[in-house]
Image 1: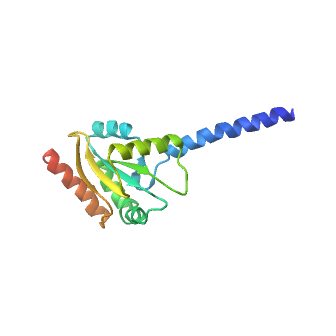
Image 2: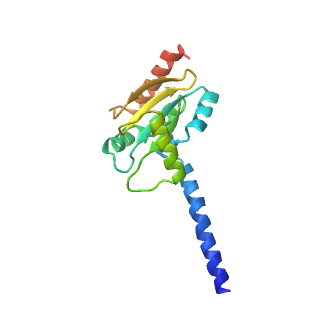
Image 3: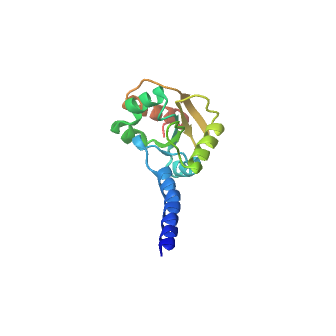
Length: 161
């Protein structure tokens, strides 16, 4: 009986590791950003006629990433304004905490696809026209000005739509 309980406890711990790491990978992030699943986000962006705002960050070690997060992306005003124009996708590269292996791989592939070499890197991409509209690093901005910049970039490429 003791042996069966040990086996059952081991099985529960083993299964819990996989379930919890998968749930953590899908956990919604601050500021309306979702973890990097580019293809899924692109399908949604095309369906909703939105752009994609890609954030490449080192959330637990990069000073400028944390500053941009606290000044712009973590503000409720940014989330409500930007969510109407773009699907927000985060590719995080933390140093002090671990991501699920599947999420780490997704982030690495996305980083390579977009040729990201520094953090933070923020890319506004329009999947309807398959164009990168802008790319920048830290940028001092208010949440409203940042969301307005997204809207201006989209209207310039889509002719006011």
